[in-house]
Image (cartoon, rainbow, N blue to C red; front, side, top):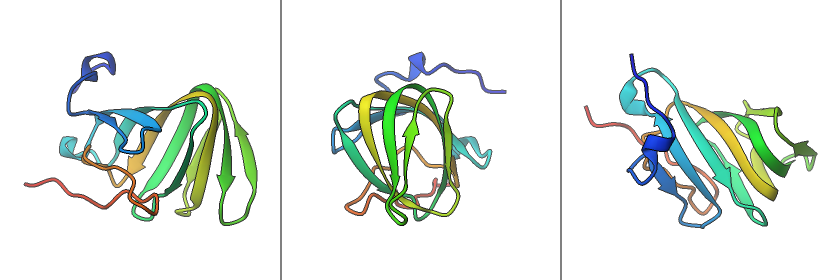
Length: 132
């Protein structure tokens, strides 16, 4: 059994800040735990816009605090995301999150991330694996 808190991850290698400066993420469950998924608490900052495309992962996101507009860049459809709202990128959709108020969310990834990932120029997380 593993028990840990997001608070204890602050300032560790599990507390990742994006190169773009638009978000930070505390990765509480990673690939090295070998459970088939990863779990993160992520904050995207107010006034930012982040283009993402999880070509290698499925992601589920639950908003716990804040306000953002999610745009499916493939269809142009927009969604207002507020606390208690979930979105699932089950089709590897290219999407943009435009943050109106600091956006706090819990994210689950499959396959799990290693903790070293950041978005590339296309908004993609590379598919990294853990050394055995």
